[in-house]
Structure formats: C-alpha cells, structure tokens
Length: 489
Ligand SMILES: [Zn+2]
Image 1 (cartoon, protein in one colour):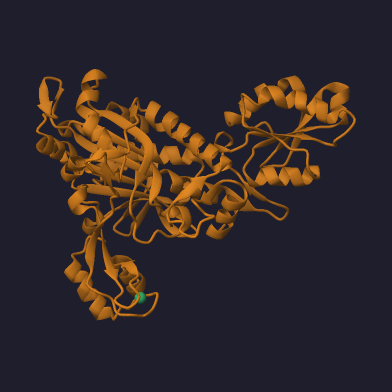
Image 2 (image 1 turned 135 degrees about the vertical axis):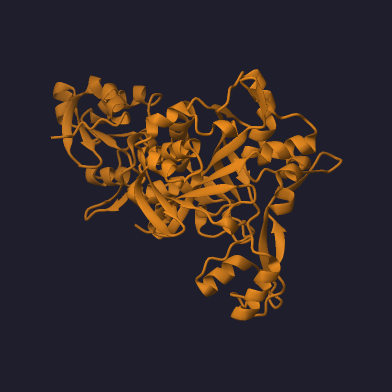
C-alpha cells in the first residue's frame, strides 16, 4: 500500500494533522498527533519499554529539551551538525545541495562532502534551481540546531538535536547513585528538534520529532565478554554490506565473520531485529545497512542503519552507531569533570553503542506494513496491543433494550481498555470503520443477548465470529491483548 493511502487514513481518521493548519504561516515539518495516533504512539513506546529497556535491564531517564551551549561545543554539534545548502540567486529558495545532486545524478552524494567538491559537482552537472531554473550560488554549511535565548540575559542554548546528550551528561551521577555496573544501557524517549532545510514527505522528515534512544556503555576491552550474547546467538538478521545483501545471517555468524565489530554490537542488532518483528514489521523487508565512511555521522566509528522497505523506498528507522568513547571523552574535556568510572578495580572511560530510533517513522512503517486493501474493506492488521482501540461495542439496533444492555457492558470496560461505543449506521459499516483503524475485536449486542447474556465477538483479521458470555468479555480481551488467537479452527 502506498504513502498517499496511509496519509489519507492518518488525516481522516484522527491519527495525525499538520500543526497550526488553519493558519497561512503554518510551518512545514511540524505535526500534531490526534487521539488515535497518540494512543498508537504511547502503545508503541510501551512496547519499546517492555521489549528493549526492561528486557535488557536498562535504566530510563527523561532529560530536559533545552541544553546549554557547552554541551554542544563538547558533542561537536555546534561545529559539525550541518547540512550543505545552496541558495538560488534568482528566486532566493534554499535547497539541500547533496539532495539536488543526488536527484540529478542518481548517485549517492554524502552530506559530508566538502563544499568545494559540491560546488564542483554543481558546475559539472549544470545544476539549476528546481523551483525557477535560476543559477545556484556557492554551497555553504547550515547548522541544524534551533538556537534559543534563555532568560533576560539571552544566554545561548539549544533545543536538543538528539536526546542522547543528556544521557552522556547525566552518566557520571547516574552511574554512582544508581550503583550501575558496566555494561549498562541507559534509555530515553522524548522530543528532539532539527531545523531541516526542506522537510518533506509528511512525517518522514520532521523538525520536531520523537526519538527513543538507547546508549549502551561498556568497557571496550570486554566487548566480547557478554553473557547474554548466547541468548541471541541464533537470532537471524539481514545485513547489507556495501550493497551486498546477506539475508538470514545468524548473530553468531555476523560476529565470527567480522561483519560487526564485536559481540556486544551483534547482540544489540539481534535484539533490535526481534523488537521490530514483534512490533509487526515484515522483517523480510528489513536490513541493517553498514554505512560507508562519508555517510556515517561525525561521531560514529562504525554505523549500521536499520532500514525497512516501504512505498517510499528504503526508510531508516534506527541509527545504530558505535560512538566509541567520543562523547564521554569530549564532555570530560570541555566540562573539566572526570567522567571515567570503575569497572572492577580499573578506571575506564566507557565506550558507547547506540540504538537511536525514530518513533514517528517507525509508526508510519508499521502502519504501512500492516495495511491491507481487501475487496470489501481496508484493514490495518496491527498487533492488538498497538491498536488505538482495543474493542468496539456495537448494539445491533437502537431499540428494545439493546442499547441499555450495551451500555451496561461498555461502562465498566472504559477505564480498563481503549473501547469505542458505536451505534451509528449498519453493523457492517461499523465493523469496517474499526477495521480501518486496526481495532482487533468487536462485540455486538443483539436479541439473543437479552435471552442468554451472550454477545458476538468478531475477529478483525479473519472476520470470524463466535459467541461468548458477557461476563467473559474482560478475560477474553486480556487474551486478545496477549496475542492469543481465539479464532483458530
Ligand atoms: Zn530559484
């Protein structure tokens, strides 16, 4: 299914809407989550907490979004978090130089290419402004951070361009007060901000977006002594190494063939694969793509992008960066604080492996993979515990005591589940409206209910129906949320 269908669903069914949309000066790259989108996001983050953070025994923090200037002097963002841009000399429009060249040549143009080289390529390809065909000026670097002035003194500070900097800055205190031991993951979910030049494609490139980041701190001398590696050694992943796709590579093979730098990296790639499998992505259309020199972020020694195939092509969902001791050493230097910690009886500056996940994109891709156009209906086959509505309560008719009985079922369920009461239109139409937003179960109250207190339970995926006792509804919903299939033959 295509991007347009999914965005139509998002806009028309209360998942997402452009921010400030009634105003003519609304800015691109900012979106609001509606009720259904908000619930799916919260449920997705819960899944991330259960299957990555808690499963791996990580600690989760929630840092502030405004951070002081020195943080970004140390992290390198002030200097290096830049995009190459060119301005049209005729109409004044600003464009990403690397993207224009990429579209014109069909070749990968790394964003970190020196500006002189970009100017040369623009000259050679005869590239013009895509808006007005005017001549392009010289390429220059534009910093992607939003600068803020804090307080009356207008102190320089920035909206964080990634959540992880608070993890690095808080690490020394956390290590001490939480009595942590290496290796240890510290996780954070929250907003990040990037002043993108030309945000495009709806939710795929945003200026304000949600990230869930995990920073795993470890002793670099012990990157291959990881007991839990054994748990996942047979988990398979897909690896794209310089354009060669290796499908179904075992975690242990990835390490032994030196496709990944160490056991710790192999383990976390496998864990991430398992997570997205559970979240409902079609994993046959996923890969970890090893990044070449000029594609990597400036802080990464080795990097793999977790990507999935969609109607928009391959989309990066998670940047998996081996950041080495870069961040902690830089913060130690600029702050003047000792950031080393004890591992056994030895002082070390830990290395960091990072799983930096885009939440908004992940939700888009899960929805697209789960969306199916069937002859009679469109249906989103989300896993039940990600669905915005868990159960619909539908009275068959609006008379003869049926609405009253339906309300008796609905009222106590409201505080325990995301439940939707719908009495408008034919039952078939009501089923289809709930199918389209991924609701896994519908309960219909009919004349038989008044006789024997049974209701019809209808399954979203198979459209099969069974009758259950009305006092069994809660236990049944709990089974559905756990992923049990109650409709198997
Ligand atoms: Zn122009």
